[in-house]
Length: 143
Image (cartoon, rainbow, N blue to C red; front, side, top):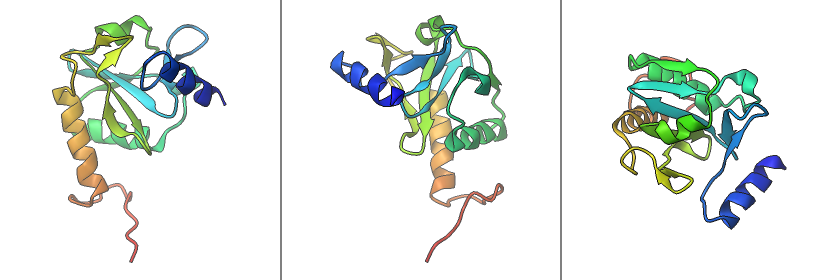
């Protein structure tokens, strides 16, 4: 219910999506997605303890990030980091890996998908479409 109300409020105010904050004012999640920020080449995502959805896609993306040799930190993320981030993206079953172009009408980075998000998105789709070896047992092929 909260996620639906978040989404409705966001859309009523001219936004496509909402980012929730936890009781301490830290970034929690989107209305149906997990959130990642990139700052100076390091990726940040909220702690599981911050009342976030334990997303399967989030976990897969974190595995791919580490596989790519990038650093991902699970930590409390103050709201202000949304405005300082070089890149932000959502992950989720429906969202897959989706860049965020603006927050509160302020552009994120250059206002388009950034290079780190692009790399992660490309690698994610390679796995999803079976274009690389499945080292993690994620694929179930159906005839």
